[in-house]
Length: 139
Image 1: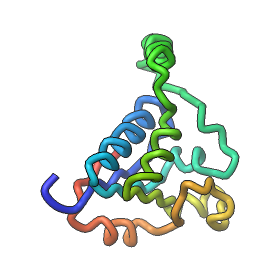
Image 2: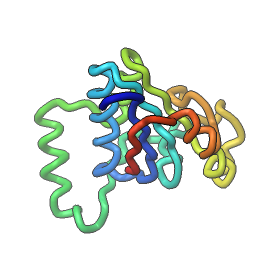
Image 3: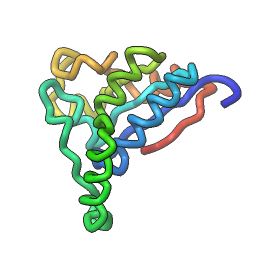
Image 4: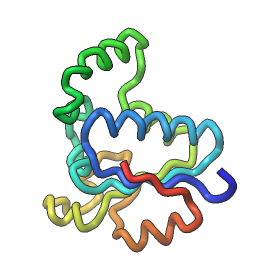
């Protein structure tokens, strides 16, 4: 990545999307690449305070493969997507921001309603401005 960093728009709350967010956050932190994550859509529910972060649902088309993936990750002793994200914040420049529109729609009044991993509740325009020059991924 030439300049800037990585902007991730996290919409989904399924394992096939959450695991890559954890992996990309860790890889970026190790490489010194800043990451900003905009949590919106169904993913917002996972960032509520006390939400179960171990929910590992998969889309219907991947259900037959899910047990093999989960067993493989367990055998590898791989951390959860949330543990990867949390550890990447400890040693890298990783920011997690919840979409203000989704927060309002879900009755999230302020940052106190969210997991401490969340840096702030912001609008889409503020996120885009913050990530000017970043490579953007929609997950």
